[in-house]
Amino acid sequence: MLLLGLSTALVSPAFAQTSGQISYEVAKKIDPSGLRIMINGEAVKPGDPNFPADIPDTRTFEQKVAFTDKYAKETVENGAGMGMAVRRVMGPGGGGGVPKTTQLGRPYEETSYVDLAGQQMLTYLTVGKDKEAQTYTTKTPIKRAEGWQLTDQTKKIAGFQCRKATVPYQKETYTVWFTTDLPITYSPIPQLTPERGVVLMIESSKEQFRATKVANNGVAEKDVTPSGSAQAVTEEKLKDIREKARADFQQKMMMNMEQN
Image (cartoon, one colour):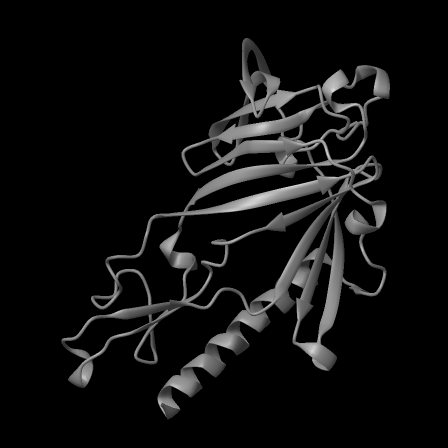
């Protein structure tokens, strides 16, 4: 079993209920090829002489997960929308002046849930606004990475005693710290979910997740339960919808900049 709820007898006395919230500080390396950069209405790619040299190589943001014994809901806070940027260069003919960069974020809303009993991720994607908004959803079984190596190393993270493990994942070795003193089994990277326990830190050369706070507050079931009002699609179809929304948004922005 990848996601196995713990009985209350195994829960730390300091966390005797089956709901709460975990806050993670996240840092991820930015892949420049995944950015959409426009300079004065023209798209540029890495390697282009005009590609900005001051793009940060890391993005940081906060990710929160609210959970009950049935579902967990992930919410990404500020700084996660580095998927698209528009850069205008001030001055005659694009020369001189102080460059101004505007981060536009993503042209859709995306929310992830974990079905703790069904051992699967549920993704909800909303494209459009108000009456034109359309929501799609897909279910993806959680496939746990193989080759876990448990160690005897322990340390406290966010007030909880954690054990260290190393896991081969994405062509490198990830370090995973997890605790069994919480009432669910969860990881902010689904493939790095332990047999039992909650991951409070993940470290690699590409990304880091570190729990900064675990709140022992009551979470209502309705606040973490996915809505049924969405069109079910395959994982591949959802990817196509997401990419089309990005392409349409980029085209619209380029047209607006040309008009201005």
